Length: 599
Image (cartoon, rainbow, N blue to C red; front, side, top):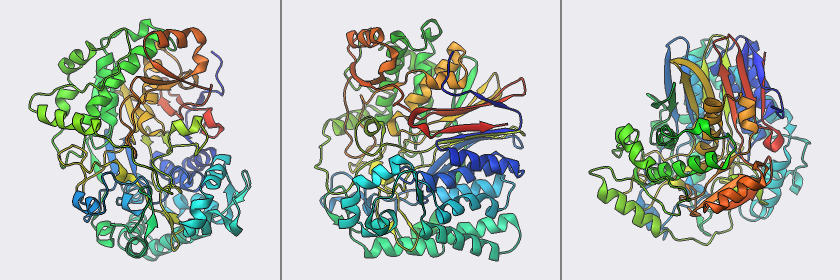
């Protein structure tokens, strides 16, 4: 089968990410003697530089990884929680019934930096300077700006000049929109990371002590102080159409700590698939697999109407359960064992018919009847607020096809020669989320928009609670052996595009690049996780390269099609290790920036 680029093959190591400079920087860590965890962190810091419309230093990050040393798969949760002052009553007192999609009120504790430091301290091999130097160099000396970043800044020019002048000072140098494919520098962000590095090295020569000192600079030092001061003293325009101060404090920062967790997993034929817990949407992927396990996908073509129909209908059922049940398990009881069970999946599978469903149909777990009814009532009462002067939500695939901010999040997969494997999906703190903090050179995140301001729901806001994130990397074993690391940006679409990749790899024997290159699809049938939480019952976006006959058949089955131009849906990357000793990697050609490398 023709592919847009070769599936990468090697034995030394493979790195794949959503930008070629991040991939190259990750490979550089492997060449220095670093492992997959050093490489992943270095790539992530570079992505903050080169894709600032998709991720920033003050964002969040979940990772799923396999350590060749411990022989365990673990989840690293670097999703920061809500500030202690972030109560439903506090937002209601401001006249809000939904957390804005941008601005300071949407901020949770920035967890990503702590997550990367924790991973490096506990599992890495290289000194902090080696890992941070590529990103600092690009911040300080400039990197070639992506056309999509330039376009995003152009659309935000009025906001940056009228309401968020600190962002304008960074992203509109000399009052002008930076030119695409020309060098662009962010010296304030470079200075922040240099100061962190200086303070780390002043702590001594020990690698772990330096990393801990860097962690402390962020959460207990000058970075936390600058964030606290900005939230206390600045009133900024957000998507409510009003100016508001923030709730994040230095104490919230000091109290934060990333956590290692046992991943959530299911078996699927000869595979075991590992995801984050129900504080994210990862279990929706696993639920969909269990529903599909009793359907003969192998007997359907990998780009056939039958395949698309059954996968989409199964996803609608799993995502309906996401709305009814998922939330931070430290605060709510999620009946995950039931939701992932064979019996429950069989009952859900029976709801899939020949015609596309137009209903949101969560299942009923005994004892949760009132909760499901409450969730359906809340979802049915969603208002559609008037958007204010600030950009909103996470930039998602819908805006990649239409005019607007073209992007979503970022993703990285790495496998090294020792057998370490990691999939990570950093996000948040993008340039359109919040004004730049001038002393730091970057903005805060807007992840709190995923909470509900309705009491009694699994994802209702509470101080110290994690928002139900959409970020969801994946590790998969085949016949008990580590095999795949994969993921994608894309908000609510992340699980959906990953399912297409995984199912085509498992059932149709496609290599990673072949599976990524085939036409992709997703639905917005269920409520969006992002402000203003719209839904489109029966919706199916699909690349028109699937063919006229397939499109006509899907339409006949009742899917409300949104035809996307070829090569416009999804940003998948994936890496694989084989029993033959070969490492493999692939990256999407869509958007012409993701790249895989290896040797």
